[in-house]
Length: 342
Picture 1 (cartoon, rainbow, N blue to C red):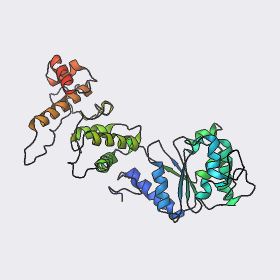
Picture 2 (picture 1 turned 90 degrees about the vertical axis):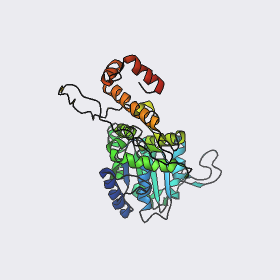
Picture 3 (picture 1 turned 90 degrees about the horizontal axis):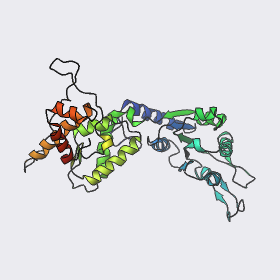
Picture 4 (picture 1 turned 180 degrees about the vertical axis):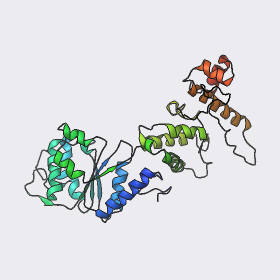
């Protein structure tokens, strides 16, 4: 069962993540079969690969990551397979590649879809023959390495387009795993936020940064195209800029606000064709020996109502003012004064 500490560095209690954790444990026990991890950028594909390695019998040997998209094509071959002295200009001594360095352990090839055809052929030989030949060498060296590959691309489509070897694809996809996007596991967002707040609260004596319930609902409804990495970066920014404070919609960047929460109730007047504002509870009061910030809480509740009205009307200030029983000029003045996203 996943806890706040996570599973192999990953965080989540949602059904999707618990299923993934079980699969990782099964795959780790095997220790030999190649694994293909597919998922969007920012979903934690390298964390999955590391977890497989760390829970396998190979954990005492190296875990060697290689980002195939980050290394120039002309250097990737020598980085992966090594070279012998004199193989090319500047090769003043022999050097083993990352495949050999991972001997006994795990080689993680991230963004495998960007690998060029000639290197795909050499990698296929490593998988089939369990041996590697250095650039400029004439003798192959046996290696015992488990290969885990990852990509955000659809390799089957690349195969159909002739941009990826079909035989290599089937060699890599012996065990396919999917890293679920954050939008499909919204139940984990609160847990992730708590974890990131704790991680970035460097001064432990500070009062804990908290998230207002309405702000939290907006964050949970946001589609997160950048996945967990985007959420982590956002929480780092919020904790640094608003350390020890309560984060409301005002503190969130505009794109995370006014999400259509689809939680309005039918107007109790019986109209039926018009939806009322979301029933919003007042901000939770933080009581202390010094009392509470009454004006601040009232202002925060007012912010919520204005933003909800704007959300329901698609930003139409005249209609929002009507829903709030305010004059349009009064609403515009409040929006400007409070610096709210309109």
